[in-house]
Length: 184
Image 1: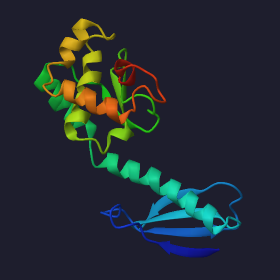
Image 2: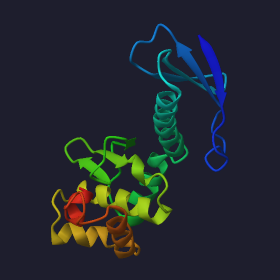
Image 3: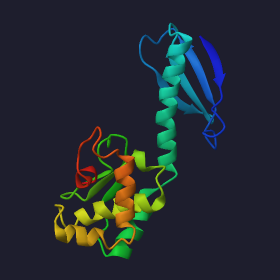
Image 4: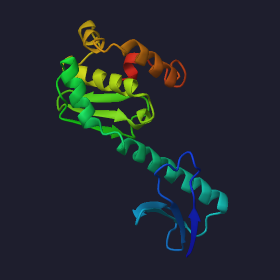
Protein backbone atom coordinates (compact mmCIF):
# COMPACT_ATOMS: atom_id res chain seq x y z
CA UNK A 1 0.00 0.00 0.00
CA UNK A 2 1.46 3.37 -0.97
CA UNK A 3 0.46 6.85 0.11
CA UNK A 4 0.56 9.97 -2.03
CA UNK A 5 0.01 13.49 -0.68
CA UNK A 6 -1.97 15.68 -3.05
CA UNK A 7 -2.64 19.39 -2.75
CA UNK A 8 -5.64 21.15 -4.18
CA UNK A 9 -5.27 24.10 -6.51
CA UNK A 10 -5.10 27.38 -4.60
CA UNK A 11 -8.47 28.75 -5.71
CA UNK A 12 -10.35 25.70 -4.44
CA UNK A 13 -8.20 25.12 -1.38
CA UNK A 14 -9.62 27.90 0.80
CA UNK A 15 -10.32 25.90 3.95
CA UNK A 16 -10.54 22.61 2.05
CA UNK A 17 -8.49 19.85 3.64
CA UNK A 18 -5.37 18.32 2.18
CA UNK A 19 -5.85 15.01 0.35
CA UNK A 20 -3.98 11.76 0.89
CA UNK A 21 -4.37 9.01 -1.70
CA UNK A 22 -3.84 5.43 -0.58
CA UNK A 23 -3.47 2.65 -3.14
CA UNK A 24 -4.97 -0.42 -1.57
CA UNK A 25 -4.49 -4.00 -2.74
CA UNK A 26 -7.69 -4.90 -0.85
CA UNK A 27 -9.80 -2.65 -3.08
CA UNK A 28 -10.93 -4.31 -6.28
CA UNK A 29 -13.24 -1.74 -7.89
CA UNK A 30 -14.52 0.88 -5.47
CA UNK A 31 -13.11 4.13 -4.18
CA UNK A 32 -13.69 5.39 -0.67
CA UNK A 33 -13.10 8.73 0.98
CA UNK A 34 -13.32 9.88 4.57
CA UNK A 35 -11.98 12.63 6.77
CA UNK A 36 -9.24 11.64 9.19
CA UNK A 37 -7.52 14.23 11.39
CA UNK A 38 -8.32 17.05 8.98
CA UNK A 39 -7.11 15.14 5.90
CA UNK A 40 -9.38 13.72 3.20
CA UNK A 41 -8.16 10.13 2.80
CA UNK A 42 -9.05 8.64 -0.59
CA UNK A 43 -8.50 4.91 -1.07
CA UNK A 44 -8.23 3.62 -4.65
CA UNK A 45 -7.51 0.13 -6.01
CA UNK A 46 -3.78 -0.55 -6.28
CA UNK A 47 -4.09 -1.56 -9.95
CA UNK A 48 -5.34 1.83 -11.17
CA UNK A 49 -3.14 3.79 -13.52
CA UNK A 50 -2.00 7.29 -12.63
CA UNK A 51 -4.57 8.75 -15.05
CA UNK A 52 -7.38 6.63 -13.58
CA UNK A 53 -6.29 7.58 -10.07
CA UNK A 54 -6.32 11.26 -10.99
CA UNK A 55 -9.82 10.94 -12.48
CA UNK A 56 -11.13 9.05 -9.43
CA UNK A 57 -9.62 11.53 -6.98
CA UNK A 58 -10.95 14.44 -9.02
CA UNK A 59 -14.47 12.97 -8.90
CA UNK A 60 -14.24 12.41 -5.13
CA UNK A 61 -12.91 15.94 -4.61
CA UNK A 62 -15.71 17.39 -6.69
CA UNK A 63 -18.33 15.66 -4.54
CA UNK A 64 -16.54 16.61 -1.33
CA UNK A 65 -16.20 20.23 -2.41
CA UNK A 66 -19.91 20.40 -3.28
CA UNK A 67 -20.84 19.09 0.18
CA UNK A 68 -18.31 21.44 1.79
CA UNK A 69 -19.75 24.49 -0.02
CA UNK A 70 -23.29 23.53 0.93
CA UNK A 71 -22.27 22.93 4.52
CA UNK A 72 -21.23 26.58 4.76
CA UNK A 73 -24.73 27.68 3.75
CA UNK A 74 -27.28 26.47 6.29
CA UNK A 75 -30.73 26.54 4.71
CA UNK A 76 -32.97 26.33 7.79
CA UNK A 77 -32.30 29.79 9.26
CA UNK A 78 -32.56 31.34 5.79
CA UNK A 79 -35.90 29.63 5.12
CA UNK A 80 -37.26 30.80 8.50
CA UNK A 81 -36.23 34.38 7.77
CA UNK A 82 -37.69 34.35 4.25
CA UNK A 83 -40.93 32.72 5.44
CA UNK A 84 -41.37 35.46 8.05
CA UNK A 85 -40.46 38.27 5.64
CA UNK A 86 -42.81 37.12 2.86
CA UNK A 87 -45.66 35.78 4.99
CA UNK A 88 -45.13 32.15 4.00
CA UNK A 89 -45.20 29.03 6.16
CA UNK A 90 -41.96 27.51 7.39
CA UNK A 91 -41.02 24.11 5.99
CA UNK A 92 -40.88 21.04 8.20
CA UNK A 93 -37.39 20.51 6.81
CA UNK A 94 -35.17 22.03 4.15
CA UNK A 95 -31.95 20.46 2.97
CA UNK A 96 -29.43 20.38 0.17
CA UNK A 97 -29.83 17.62 -2.41
CA UNK A 98 -27.20 16.41 -4.83
CA UNK A 99 -29.91 14.43 -6.63
CA UNK A 100 -31.62 17.57 -7.99
CA UNK A 101 -30.09 17.69 -11.47
CA UNK A 102 -32.97 19.02 -13.55
CA UNK A 103 -34.68 21.15 -10.91
CA UNK A 104 -33.40 23.88 -8.66
CA UNK A 105 -35.65 22.79 -5.84
CA UNK A 106 -38.59 20.62 -4.95
CA UNK A 107 -41.27 20.60 -2.30
CA UNK A 108 -43.31 17.74 -0.92
CA UNK A 109 -46.41 19.70 0.02
CA UNK A 110 -47.92 16.92 2.11
CA UNK A 111 -44.98 16.68 4.47
CA UNK A 112 -43.58 20.20 4.13
CA UNK A 113 -40.13 18.94 3.12
CA UNK A 114 -38.05 21.06 0.74
CA UNK A 115 -34.92 20.07 -1.14
CA UNK A 116 -32.59 22.56 -2.82
CA UNK A 117 -30.13 21.57 -5.54
CA UNK A 118 -26.49 21.65 -4.50
CA UNK A 119 -25.86 23.33 -7.87
CA UNK A 120 -27.07 26.54 -6.18
CA UNK A 121 -24.32 26.55 -3.56
CA UNK A 122 -22.31 29.07 -5.60
CA UNK A 123 -25.27 31.11 -6.86
CA UNK A 124 -25.71 34.66 -5.63
CA UNK A 125 -27.69 34.82 -2.36
CA UNK A 126 -30.69 36.52 -4.02
CA UNK A 127 -30.97 33.59 -6.46
CA UNK A 128 -30.88 31.00 -3.68
CA UNK A 129 -33.43 33.10 -1.77
CA UNK A 130 -35.72 33.11 -4.80
CA UNK A 131 -35.66 29.32 -5.09
CA UNK A 132 -36.37 28.99 -1.37
CA UNK A 133 -39.27 31.46 -1.67
CA UNK A 134 -40.56 29.55 -4.69
CA UNK A 135 -40.58 26.30 -2.70
CA UNK A 136 -42.09 27.96 0.39
CA UNK A 137 -44.91 29.27 -1.82
CA UNK A 138 -45.68 25.67 -2.77
CA UNK A 139 -46.57 25.08 0.88
CA UNK A 140 -49.50 27.44 0.26
CA UNK A 141 -50.35 26.69 -3.39
CA UNK A 142 -49.20 23.40 -4.89
CA UNK A 143 -49.52 24.27 -8.59
CA UNK A 144 -48.00 27.10 -10.62
CA UNK A 145 -51.23 29.14 -10.74
CA UNK A 146 -51.62 32.93 -10.80
CA UNK A 147 -52.14 32.79 -7.02
CA UNK A 148 -48.83 30.93 -6.66
CA UNK A 149 -46.98 33.42 -8.87
CA UNK A 150 -48.43 36.31 -6.86
CA UNK A 151 -46.86 34.80 -3.73
CA UNK A 152 -43.48 34.28 -5.43
CA UNK A 153 -43.51 37.73 -6.98
CA UNK A 154 -43.61 39.35 -3.54
CA UNK A 155 -39.86 38.87 -3.83
CA UNK A 156 -38.52 42.03 -5.52
CA UNK A 157 -35.72 39.96 -7.12
CA UNK A 158 -38.06 37.30 -8.57
CA UNK A 159 -37.80 38.32 -12.22
CA UNK A 160 -34.05 38.88 -12.02
CA UNK A 161 -33.51 35.50 -10.32
CA UNK A 162 -35.68 33.71 -12.90
CA UNK A 163 -33.49 35.20 -15.64
CA UNK A 164 -30.35 34.10 -13.85
CA UNK A 165 -31.68 30.55 -13.41
CA UNK A 166 -32.84 30.43 -16.99
CA UNK A 167 -29.36 31.33 -18.22
CA UNK A 168 -27.73 28.94 -15.76
CA UNK A 169 -29.92 26.03 -16.80
CA UNK A 170 -29.26 26.55 -20.50
CA UNK A 171 -33.02 26.74 -21.01
CA UNK A 172 -34.09 25.11 -24.21
CA UNK A 173 -30.93 23.02 -24.28
CA UNK A 174 -30.63 19.65 -22.60
CA UNK A 175 -33.67 19.98 -20.37
CA UNK A 176 -36.09 21.56 -22.79
CA UNK A 177 -38.27 22.29 -19.77
CA UNK A 178 -40.13 25.45 -18.88
CA UNK A 179 -38.86 27.75 -16.10
CA UNK A 180 -41.64 26.52 -13.79
CA UNK A 181 -40.64 22.91 -14.30
CA UNK A 182 -37.09 23.73 -13.26
CA UNK A 183 -38.19 24.75 -9.79
CA UNK A 184 -41.26 22.98 -8.63
